[in-house]
Amino acid sequence: WTTEEITELKEFDAKMSEYQKYLTNSIQQQVQTLFGGGADFWSLLGETNPTTTTASPLLTSSIAPIDAPPAPNFCTAIY
Image 1 (cartoon, one colour):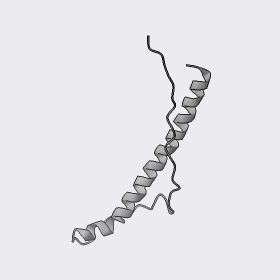
Image 2 (cartoon, rainbow, N blue to C red):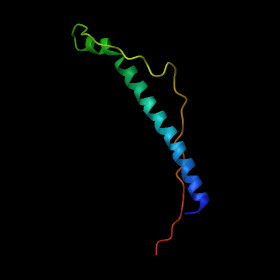
Image 3 (cartoon, one colour):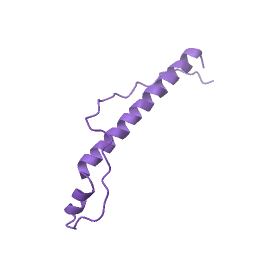
Image 4 (cartoon, rainbow, N blue to C red):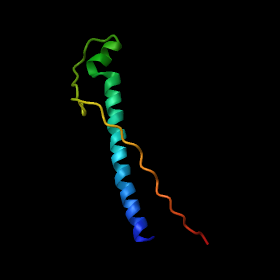
């Protein structure tokens, strides 16, 4: 591995970590929007509101989209 390749891999890793955080937050926000909190979910089942706690939303606004970083392209000779 060259120094340039190692640097490129480190940059890719950092960008991919940010992309994974974005995906996780986006999915959590979509699930919370879908179910709308504990009380709404139980009312769909026709049950009276059981004792529930509603988690505060992680994100109060929409998440700015992040594109997946391009994968490094290294050619490695195999002998």
